[in-house]
Image (cartoon, rainbow, N blue to C red; front, side, top):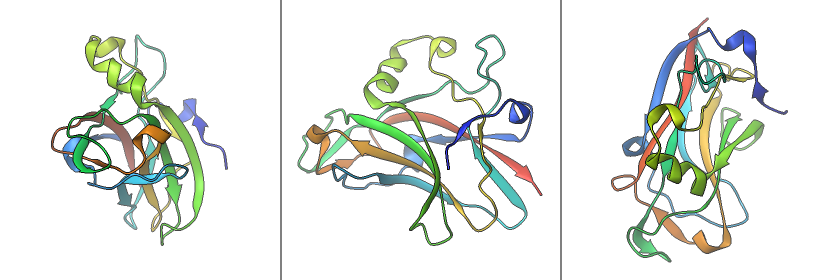
Length: 167
């Protein structure tokens, strides 16, 4: 299923952030999506990626993501990880992707750190909802040059968003 920005959600939900320290320290494998953060949806909640509208004057979710290597694996400590950042909804076992959306290129999201906060990319509300028992995930599809690199959450910088709605 395709995920897309969905204007009726722009005024919905509590904004929640995901910062670099919450990411998993995983070794990336090229040619596949690698989960770097996951949250199982509670029985009394629904989650959806992003928050608020896409229109810059009203936006609420300005994002950035500069992921760096730990030095374990194939990369040198501090190497910037490149590839695509993806948000996905998976089943309760995290085996099957039910919907996904490419948030952006990690190089571009790292460059966003050099911009004023309100000039950074916007992660507006994206549908569909992740229903109770399912997982909302951020994933990296690394470029070949980032194959075998381990993500270092302690030295990375990121601020991504999702929204939470009570059933």
